[in-house]
Amino acid sequence: MNYEKLSKEVSYALRHAPWEYELEMDEEGWVSIEQLLTALNTEGRFEYITQNDLAVMIDKSDKKRHEIKAGKIRAMYGHSIPMHIVKEEKIPPDKLYHGTARRFIESIKNNGLLSMSRQYVHLSADIDTARKVGLRRDNSPCILEIDSKRAYENGVKFYHGNEKVWLADKIPSGYISEL
Image (cartoon, rainbow, N blue to C red):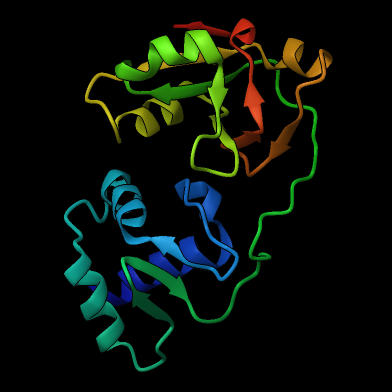
């Protein structure tokens, strides 16, 4: 195990781009270890990482960049983002995508995409990214296409996360179709 590379990846996720890993950070910078492990395991380079690996990574580091407490982890310093991602409304691309588990489709058809326990609904700029996200919860996920152009024109607010991730408060079901 290369703990230095793991530390750099975890630092990047927690300090600079939590939205790239679909991490929800609280006001003190804490993220659920389970959520971080899911993201790291999906990315490919760190697919067998465990909570123990994170603990060893912290112990081996002379700079003590991270801490773990009560099932959560945070970077202790070096953030380039505010603790809460600043929402800057942007005009989205015409289409966005969302990968989800099949078991959620009925609820989405009835209620639209909701942020649930997160701050925002996470949307992907491309189908491949949406599929990778969906695979975190289902080995055969549903890919949803969002008519983001029409939704935006009708008042749905979108926020730019990065080149692959867009955020929204809610996506009503009338703008969602299954691929």
